[in-house]
Image (cartoon, rainbow, N blue to C red; front, side, top):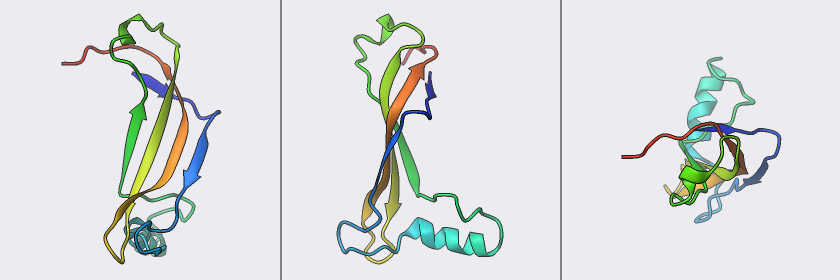
Length: 105
């Protein structure tokens, strides 16, 4: 298991569809109606799905001490509402702190 560290992050934002250049994303379109109904905070980012990834060598994972810092990133995916292209609209680069290990199957 790993714990996300918020103090050292960098974000890359890609607001336009890489295929057609539209800024009309599916997640923002869906969020707009929820914001209008008062069911969602307008400051909240909306995405279709998020990949959470930790960079680790599985051959060395067992020897890492608890508390070790590992590079990590979140890729926030969205879909163009005009052409249907999926793209990583926001990438958050940071680190996680190792809090324990679980045996994979």
